[in-house]
Image 1 (cartoon, rainbow, N blue to C red):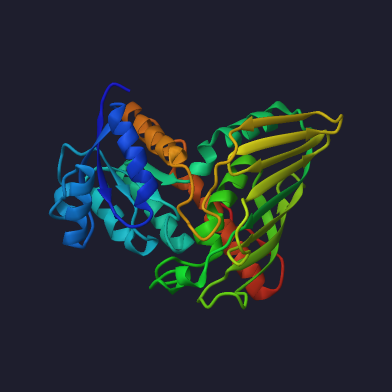
Image 2: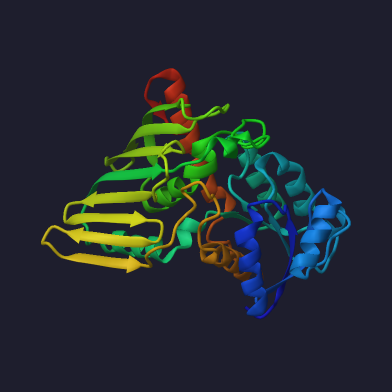
Length: 346
């Protein structure tokens, strides 16, 4: 990548922590530079900028109209996205956003369509897809060594204390768009979908356990039917104290492959075992949501920067991110209706 891209950073809350570390790494290696940062709270953005050696922008408009800036990394809550996307897309800036795309699938589709119409790249931070273990899983599936996959099981047994949901807006439809599915399990679900055929329909139960007081669901369980005839399950919760690492298991004719936060373990029916990836890396499944390595976030930013510089589509683009939104919709609708529900097609 010959050109060093200039990035704006918008949104300086908790989600910015791994991104800041990733940006620092990429600045040090000469991949990009941070041209300005913005949060609506002036004191916060100035303190943040000073602490990191970056420039505090006076306004969003100043960043959007700065012709030297190539891209924006948008880390705001999903309820603050549509107007920001419109502003930066109208000014030709490439946009990389934290998940989810928006609170509702309809709004997410509008964001994707707006960026496509403006011909600006849109990337979504679904960092699980770029982890070495996930890439190894993709290669294993493509090789056919596991044989036909008959069953896929995704388990996200996390924990969040009540204090987490006591923060204003947390776990609400108005700010976050939902609970455990769209805020926590969405990463693992997106990774699963990147490795499987489309989900055709679901039968699900979702609700709030007695362990939390919140507007939306802290538990969801679903049976899945995939387009190739295989079946699967998803169980996701933030009520499983003290929180356990998520895992996705692929059961095939010749063995099973377990993909957790950072490691792929393959158990063959002939008794052999293979592993790939790294061990001992968490994903924030316990009381500390930020207890994870920042490397995958750095890799997403690096891939996006290279895509923008090379004029190609980023590996994790906005349209591909819509699959998980549609699956979440189907799970919640199935729970409300108490019946099997088809997953909308894109």
